[in-house]
Length: 226
Image (spheres, rainbow, N blue to C red):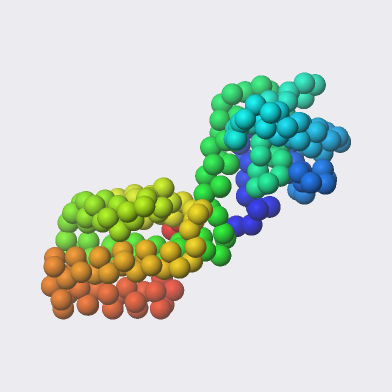
């Protein structure tokens, strides 16, 4: 999903009338959507630059958003090196929190190419886990995963990027990691799962299930779950 599609999703939040992403360098609109006033670029660019100056003077490294409400209800956030402003129907704290939640979630995505590759690898691992759990205790697999992931990720770089639903792994993002790190982590996790399957099911049964998953992947039955 590209940046434009990400921002359009904010219009699905009840209470948001429109948005505009404004360049922090030029002050021009990069993207906008919904209903916004004609001078939205000036409002966002001016307020955004002012809040950066004030933040530096006060020694503030980060801030969530600036409430710039006046004749219109407007909040402005730093977003990927630019300024992102939202026009709200009313001064609603719940809507503001929902915006911040979505921005933080999307900030985890990182590089789109790495993200898509990570999702594909994790979906394959989840499919393998599902196959192995058919002849063993799914809760046991979940327990094994909860122990293995921190052990395979001692620096904690992947823990916040993965979510475990039952025995299905879901990728939340790839912020701060590169392709080599993704490949290494996924290989370690896959090796761990296969070794545990051999212990639980026996070598022949484990191989049989691995071949079954390979056939499903080859025939395109594996759906994107993340």
